[in-house]
Amino acid sequence: MSGRRRKHWGWGYEDQQPSMEQLRAQALAVSTHLGFGALEPQAPVPLESVRLAPPRVQAPAKLAEICAQDDHARASHARGKSYRDVVAGFRGEFPHPPDVVFAPRSEDEVETVLEWCAGANVAAIPYGGGTSVVGGVEPRVPSRFDGAASIDMRRMDRVLEVDAVSRAARIQAGALGPSLEDQLALHGFTLRHFPQSFELSTLGGWIATRAGGHFATLWTHIDDLVESVRAVTPAGTWQSRRLPGSGAGPSPDRMLIGSEGALGIVTEAWMRVQAPPDHRSRVAVSFGSFVQGAHCAQAIAQSGLHPANCRLVDATEAAITGSGDGRHALLLLAFESDDHEVDAAMQRALEICGRHGGRWEQVSRRAPGEGAAGADEGAVSTWRQAFLAAPYLRDVLVAMGVITETFETAITWDRFPSLYERVLETARCAVTEATGLRCGEGLGEAKVTCRFTHLYPDGPAAYFTVLAPGERGEEVEQWDAIKRAVSDAILDCGGTITHHHAVGRDHMPWYERQRPAPFAAALRGAKAAVDPVGIMNPGVLVAA
Image (cartoon, rainbow, N blue to C red; front, top):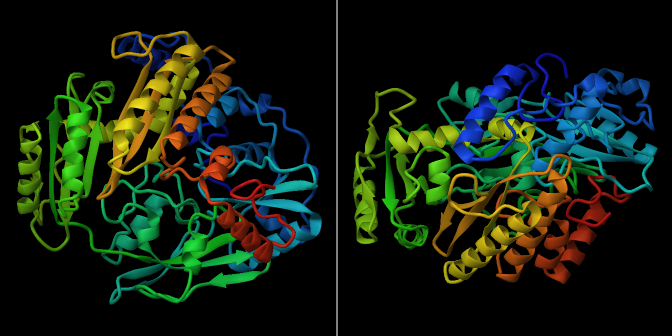
């Protein structure tokens, strides 16, 4: 827990925080582009001005080498990275800090920490990269506990073993995305899982939250890459057998994937890896409307072509990110392979695009021997850069008093049109009611945009973004009102409350409506079996 420090409130590291002069320049550029947002940004409350409640418990001396109770450790582990988390942290509000932060170096130390938590009546909150956007790592626990501990897994960050024959690797759960990829690259492999949080999130976090990656078809979620999982629970170690597939009852891996720390702490996993792609082809295709592009995306999803990327972005979002003209929806299409050329697949996909009224210019290609980065051209590269920069830009928008947050779902193709219309209308009405500003595409109007992040033969994952001026000090309440209205609409239309952002504490009211009652009872029974005293991340997945 030493070295380069993360921000205690926002995205990235302390040395990445812009100066006030830089913030003013960024605020001017953003306000000019959107037509709203304060030109004089506020500064975050510095850590030395933050007042945390004193720790309610003290860690035992035998764990002194792996624990911390200083203000930075506690504040930086008190919240995730949702909009509401960042706004509250920006204002120095940390009502539920952990009493102690542990950073175990081995599985034995994880076991010791959990034993101490159970004996001391302390809630145990597993913590990977802290990038949860649904309240998954917040130590907001019932008063029956005498304290809360955050268990930071980032010291357990090594690739332990590589099976080149089976193309699999045994990796510790605390490995951050970049480090994981660097270690695999030494063996000529890649995991090929790139969520937007890739830079600051961990393998264990991806597994615990059923994280979705960047790629649109086939291996869309971390589920598809897991061969076996090992976890420490209060009742003992949970280790599944390495297998390419099995019909032996309900999968122990599938129960841990998406368990969000409620059943135990993932310590390592065997993951399916592959060779980096040598053949790549990319293009941006424009459509007259988002609906027109959606029909094309459906045809491609059902064609069996399986593009690596098939991300449909509406005209407003394309314009905001600088990748489009504001009049056309944009389909970002890509194919890649480590084995064979992909030109034929791209050609067939473009034939489908043409049949649906799509228009495109140059196709960007990369063949073996042309370098690892390849040649990203035009709109594809512009959108990707904006996508990666979005978490950093959000900190600037928070300083400007702008509401900027997302919600996502998935639904079958036959029900998508009605969900799309209702959710957009609900979101626009909720934004106008909360902020007083009309939603539209014009300068100075609030924005609600939509894009497809992932495609399946039977339906899309739709991802909506809100941009609107907030009332200083009221932004969280304004967003909560918008989120409630939209979440109700999503469930009423038959969609899922989350496609890849997990449940956490924030989605629990809707998750309880979505899941079947017998399954909820079975989940409670499973938790009682592996976590008899209920210390593991209470309030997540199972009511505390």
